[in-house]
Length: 544
Image (tube, rainbow, N blue to C red):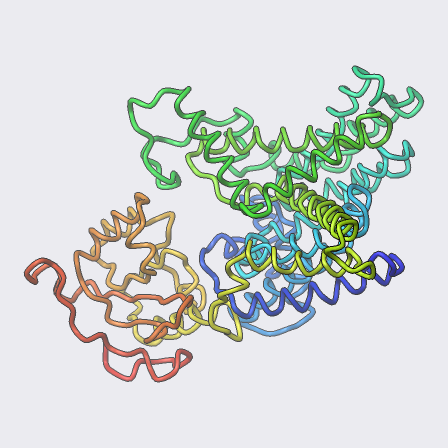
């Protein structure tokens, strides 16, 4: 990789990323419904409701606009075409992420670490789950990384010409997700701190114009959108993180678990710090974490003499510290935190892990040659890439034991949607926690946000869930278990799930609570079949 020209190296990484991502996506399945909000927003925009889709929507609009553009490019009608347009847009964004990510890795750690680190980021299950669930993290990371690379180039060269790239891409990232403005804010903070140490100082001729551009640029470009939105954004999470909105109520459905009445604020933040560290460990993975720490230490040692490298790592430290503080605040104020919230520091640490692995390989090969344990012809490059592949397989279990292959990550819910459309009467209400089967059936119903209302509605007949929804410790799991009251599912989709494959269960609330009535509550009756193939539109039996 290091002997190739930069353009050829990036082209090879693009091809490898597309092939790896294609394989991973075909062995993955949609698991939650956040991405559906962006599809609904895209449908509004496509139908001409620009004010509702762009201004009044809870989510920032750029991801949905990308879905609209992709849908018009590939064509088609109906829910499946919109889901595939969103999938194609997310997939393209992550593949194109290779370009700025490899440039960033090269400037921070060198071309060798950039190649492996780039692929490790791309095939990270958190990133691939963002694709299959058509989440906004995919385009957000693309814009953020371009702007991040521009900031690193500015700090290294001191040329103001790099700042328009940083500001422009930061605004695009902000129009995708509100945390995009962290990028210019972190760069301003790093510039404000840089005069405090001789090794990080920037010439005053660059310092003053840079601070002014970084303050005024985002205000000019993003200010109009903020004005019509009435603030940084309407997502409640960002308001709680910044202290602009009250904490989520103790018993709120959005919390991972109810907040105990006797839990102090100090205990809440202790738990939030622990959760943040766990999220970073999940994102970077435990095998890569020691290598990441080694890579960061090596980079800091190299930057100890000051100059551009020291300024760069001051900026990286501000970004990681600000991201960590935001994650702690999110959990402390909202009661939830998932691995995808830590993607910004994860990306930096994974690149550092590739750097740490490269350093270990070079030292080990050199030591082996001196001791006569390795032939003189052995080069670190093949060993590095071989260990990199082994590390990826060991770090990401989904690569070792992928789920069954599907033509579409939403295949299970598409089949469930066809069953709902063909069997549920118009007057009957359906509760689908992920909403995907409702989307593909073309009908409304109760979803995660309205699960409490569903429990109180006597018209609800059909409940669509996965086993994890029922067995979980979340508040909504208790509601579902009470609602189902020990009944057995009337349909399983697919009828016989293979290892690693999701299985959707459909419950009919008009049937008797068989399991609850049986001695011990553990009786089982033969389950009906949803058809010989998962894609059949109706069941082979009459299940209404």
